[in-house]
Each structure stands twice: as structure tokens, then as C-alpha cells.
Length: 214
Image (cartoon, rainbow, N blue to C red):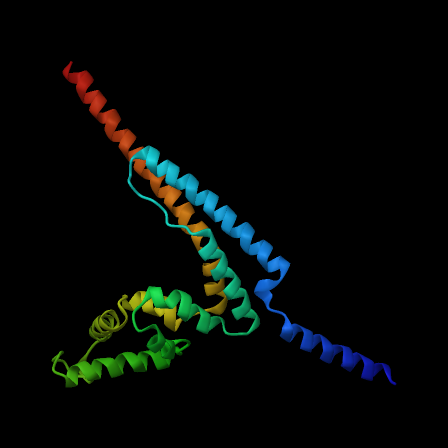
């Protein structure tokens, strides 16, 4: 039996074994998901305490178990090469209306997207919604109609739709799902710091006024 035959046999066996492995059930996936959700939960709890001390009335909703399940299901989606479907089901469904319909616009080229904007404008013109014919409309008018259509159909702005859907990127969306909460919490910390600074400044101004009147 030749070495090449043995190598091919090992490769085939490895592929069969990989097909039987569910990534979300592996110890490393479980450990990574647990570590990340633990860090997020502690950060969220600390921010909640800061909000309570500052009297803002804000709270962060963070369910560690739900978050862990989401990360593990993403691991399976990556292994099965269905990240885009996973994203639309788990993120897109909350980001915009008619998320399944939005899939058709992912990855359009510049020319394809401009053509789509013109078709929407033409539909609105034919329906009597806009008076200016397509061949006389300038880019701003076409963009305004597109923004209206996107808002009415998907519930977000044209700019948001282009960023999240038309320019959808597997790598960027994976990073967003993995590290989005930590970035969000960090932004909240900065915002809370600004609010506290502004409040302290107002208090200092009031104290100066009181001292001046005394």
C-alpha cells in the first residue's frame, strides 16, 4: 500500500470526523464564549452601578446565557459557511424591517446600486409621488426618494441601509457580533463621564452664583 493512499485515507477520515463535530460543543468554543460573556456582564454591571450613582435612571440589558448561546450558534454558522444567513436571522431581524427582502441588495456594485436607485425613483414618478421625470432629476432628488423608500420599506435611513446591507461585510459583521457589546459599553462609559462632568460644571456655576449673592 503506497504512502499516498494512506495519506488520502487519513485526509478522508479527518474530513468525516470534522463533519461530525459541532463547533459549539467543543471545549474551546465553550471557554471562549464563557470568558467573553463574563467580561461583558461584569462591565455591564459596573456601568449600571455608575448610572445608579449618577442618578441617570439608565440600565443595560445583558443576559449572559442568551449572549453565550448566540456566540455558540455563530460558531456553528461559521463552520457551516452560513454567516450571512445567521446575521440576517439574528441581527438583521432586529436592525430593520423585511430583513429577508433586504438580502437581495447585499453586495451590489456601484453601478447596480445606482441603477436600483433610479428604478425606485421611476416607480415613484409613475405613481405620481414625484413630478420631475427621471431624466431631469438630479442625484439629490433621486437620493431623497430612495431614502423615503428605504425608510418606508426597511425602517432605517438610506445611509444606514447602504452601510449595513449593500456594503455588508462578513469580516466586519463578525467583529461587530463578537465585540459590539464591549464597544457599546465603552461608549456608554464615555457618555456617562461627559454627563457627570457637565453636571459638575452646572453645580459649580450655581455655587458661584450663590456665593456671589451672599
